[in-house]
Image (cartoon, rainbow, N blue to C red; front, side, top):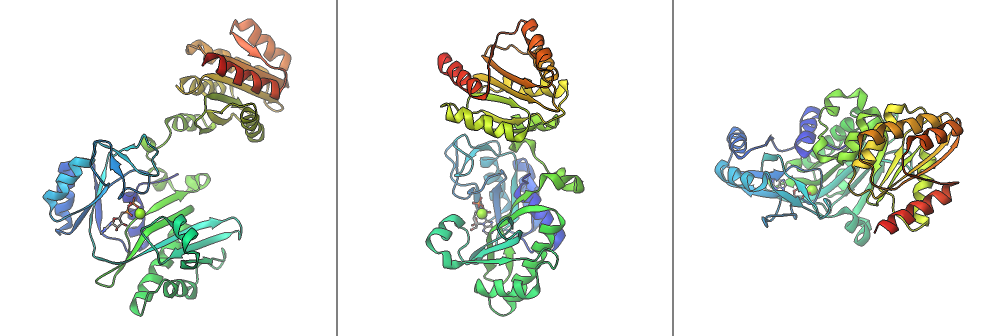
Length: 396
Ligand code: ADP
Ligand code: MG
């Protein structure tokens, strides 16, 4: 799960990570209030969407940039009114962009230097790993490609945690001097505490800055949380913003379905993650494109199957549906009944290709045959994928 910058900064404040004061607003009037409450004329207005590159982004109405400095609360209000309700396109949003519903009004600072700082789970070393660079405010992938010597890494022992000497070493590698080393390493220690305590899989601060007054501050924040640990953090789970997520995935999560939206046009309903992966592979191999990954699991109920099928049918991108079930624990008749129940509630006007095998397959096939649903039956996985691709191509 991801959260907005303004929410990330609430966590920063809670854990003692130095960051400029700020407050979110969802209207221009609220932006004015928030700006006045900060008690300064040095302000910044930042569009809140789950995507980076906002500063260099463009609104669909032509307004340039999702991050702007303002020199009075009135100016902040005016900027907020230009951003709220508008669609911002950045290199991370895709060309459809993202609707800005909120802005963050924060204190602006005089930046002397920009740095990059991130903590993530590194599978190679099986440890939390810190990545930092003296080149901040830019794409870290570009720095990695053009100036790999400017990127510093520090693996953290999971039982010992980040050690003071490691934090100080990083600070001096980045070029901090004297008292700034203390300030930077204090920030790194607090950030690590936050990363572990909140079960993050990534925190990224780009840029981390040194101000002209000598303060070290986190100006931007991007978080990823381990979804499987969210039950331990109700306050963080409550920060979820479904408006920022794929609506198909939001719907699927309500029914405990393992669903990932993709860009293709063949909707897939499969039991078991491995079979779902190979179904997607074989669709690709046959020249098609899956519209989703969907594992209904081993013990799905009729109702879950029904909801899964409804989500596939409701996706305007889907031009054919491929049901591929290998009934082990899952029973083919349960799947068949779920599909039949769902088909009663939706107008199924696209081809439905079904491959059933395994437990109660005869009952499942009989149910489908008697249902009067127009379906294309397939003998095996290869046959099913070919028929799905054919169905989509014929429709085009
Ligand atoms: P994004 O990465 O989405 O473009 P950032 O939060 O990194 O958004 O903001 C873009 C740039 O705006 C930063 O690199 C920084 O130069 C400037 N900026 C952001 N917040 C502030 C602030 N509080 N004071 C001064 N400048 C800021
Ligand atoms: Mg940034």
